[in-house]
Image 1 (spheres, rainbow, N blue to C red):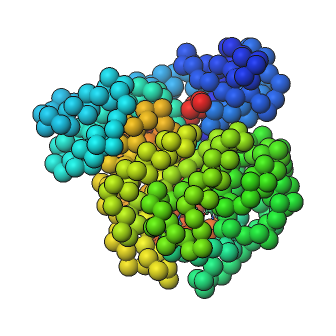
Image 2 (spheres, protein in one colour):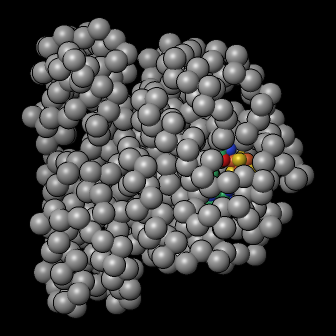
Length: 429
Ligand code: SAH
Ligand code: SF4
């Protein structure tokens, strides 16, 4: 199973370095900055960036295997994204009609959606979100791998289980270990995008990070970095070494809450860094935590709009998982329904958004992944950290992946995507 299908390049804009690629008749825009490419070539793309060229014969062989399956998946997805006609209160109907007419939603509109209590109305809202996802992205679904390479951290975020003051077994993977883990994810599971994540740990200095990015990029994958608040210079060096995507959440749009939960740091500094990363040309994945103590509904709505303002290419938000040993251990658990509302509302505010089902969200219930994908989400991450380290990377309790080996998670994900009619075509930009 490939995590992304080959696509044919059908048009190239040389000035902007953007190509139009074709997946069985569906067109997507792709950035071509990583390689020399011509019309008629076949390529792999991830997150809207070309990852590598592949031989035409090989590409046609893969596509031949996929042809019937792709059309079958597409049909299934269309079937599952239909909207049923049910009675809705006038204010909700008005908002959903606005979505349907592709009008921009206001915060007030989103507030009306958050006010939905009736299960039937909730069902319709999620159906519409799924429909909008299908209308803008077809049945594409990106699956990225994540390697958690160090649980050392110099920060003390209140929510996090690997915060500096927490007493736990710490590990740092060496450069060779990280590259070996990446190679295994590529060779064994065919990943075409890998996220490299860690605490804010300066032991992995710029030289080491640069070597890691360069060597992982040589495996012909999209390199995603998630290393927290490092300097603009660090991010620039990593971009120059081949990293093309960065995951950095602003965590909450509420300045006071941010300062309290991330002691010694300021929201504005984090936002400035996120903006610099975006300006450098990185594919930006950002977002926030839902369910922080003292967080209001307005805070959540503001956070959805802030993610849009920051021009996120990928929305990453997840529920707070109250974690033993952290100052937020006794916080209230977030209802799965709240997360589905956030996903659906985000899909309405930005129909083009790529919305990630985060690993934290998966811990809410066995069905969380399926429900999120059916509520407007269109992207997944699978933990491919070597098991001996995975167990020590406890940013939150009950990580869903820990119950299962990577092999099983990969197989379950393939089965889940097939049952929902999703295909591993790239999402485009
Ligand atoms: N140190 C980096 C990357 C690792 S943490 C950083 O902070 O950016 C990655 C994300 O995990 C954080 O952005 C935070 O939103 C999330 N996180 C940490 N603890 C969590 C918890 N208990 N529940 C939910 N999300 C959590
Ligand atoms: Fe460190 Fe990130 Fe956890 Fe904060 S969220 S303590 S920066 S790993």
